[in-house]
Image (cartoon, rainbow, N blue to C red):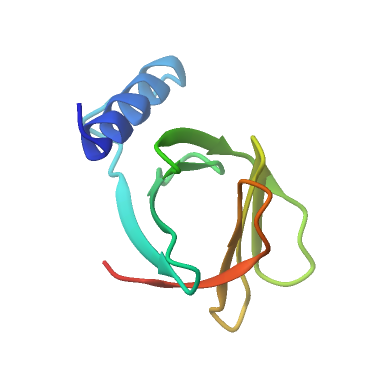
Length: 104
């Protein structure tokens, strides 16, 4: 099973458990590439405040956290943030925070 199929499976299960009809849940997938060479995929549901991420060969669900500026998600040893100015960063696997840009 490739990583894209894994995310679809995780998101489909989350939709069923959360009570969202799969047909009504319009998922957005975004691919990112970071300055340190990290690549990851983020899945977003319009009715779910969490981020579903595929990074380092594993799926991580990141709950939204309180942020003074922008959006901040953290969980499972991964942090993902997008500032109001649009700067995206990720921290994972005990690596330093790195800037990332969206590729799709």
